[in-house]
Image (cartoon, rainbow over all chains, first blue to last red; front, top):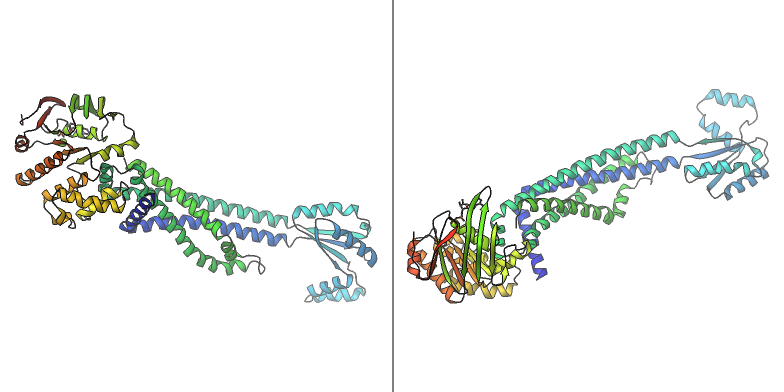
Length: 305
Length: 226
Ligand SMILES: Nc1ncnc2c1ncn2[C@@H]1O[C@H](COP(=O)(O)OP(=O)(O)O)[C@@H](O)[C@H]1O
Ligand SMILES: [Mg+2]
């Protein structure tokens, strides 16, 4: 009997959905717009994380060694550095490699190349390039340099933490998220109003049936349930719509955004595919809850049982 | 079976529709309630099915005090009282059969019950051969008989009919009344609200006359007074 009532309620909701087809369409469109802004929020999050990660991967610590440091000491220092827990890699750049890189970098600048040649010998220092995972890890590495046995061969260090770039990126992300949240809230409020109105009209068009149901003794929940079912139907339609619209959108967006990142760093489509259930399941739940609230408000106000 | 005890109903702002009204109706009775328009007859009916709350007094159904009936108990009350109202029409887009089965569906009856009971009530009102027509394809009197059929699907102990002959000519009206008499003979208490003098006089049953929201006359084999 419960199943039978359930089927009747769903049928009733579907009938009503199509009876006021244009109204249903508008309601779902608004819902899709709200969901779009929420998904945009997710994109902003994914993109900014990828951007910050790609900047963080560029951070490194260069230790310039004395020009006369012997290979043995350098080997010991390199080992000690590698053993530090924060360090993920140490690369040795010899005097010769440094010169090569320098010449390559300035190959179009004849004045520099000329003055190098005049100098006769190789003036560049060998160096060790240390990499770690996160910004605070570098600070720890720098602090532990003094405890290393061969630290006397370190002449100078160069540490560019890209701090100002990171901060400004975080600021932009923060602002973009704020705007997206604001837009989502506005659309959420509009959704409530639109669903409220759709249910109000559904109740109005069913006045006769409702009156009959009341007078023949249909239970209160049976009279109300179709309007709640309809609200859930709207949520379902909205999420289905956003899935159909959003995938092509992300596919189109990916190459544009991907151009700013090194290959493989930004996987928008993959992100949405991997978290499909989580992303759209939660959105369906949220949309359903918002719609049910709106529907309950309308039912409470316009459907006196 | 039905007891009204000093019932007063005041509509806002200050319209006294029922004024200290008391009456008792026993099981199996056929009672006509008559009175001029605006004297509180419909208000009485609505109070009995929990559609209007009374301001003072008590309404008791059997041993059930429904004066302060809870919202969620109202459906159970209404399944025990069949109603025929002027604004309680058939749904034009459903066939007569669908109209009656709708009343059973929304109360959670299973298809096998519906298939068994609906033809029975159509037979009772003499329309089993027109079940699959639409309301617009039958006469006003026949529509009213379907409304009565619909009110019988829960086998109510009481049938309330508020002006069931309101828009009908005298032949159709007489048909409706003899149908109500038949239903009464099957054991259902009938409360007929009407201002049709002919009908009341031909019935020769109990007549309660209401005026100004109170009972001014109650006769065993009554005639229309006013
Ligand atoms: N919902 C209402 N609000 C205010 N006044 C009402 C309402 N319903 C009925 N009345 C008033 O109560 C009185 C009794 O009405 P009603 O019970 O419909 O009388 P009857 O059925 O005998 O014609 C009338 O004066 C009517 O105007
Ligand atoms: Mg009336």
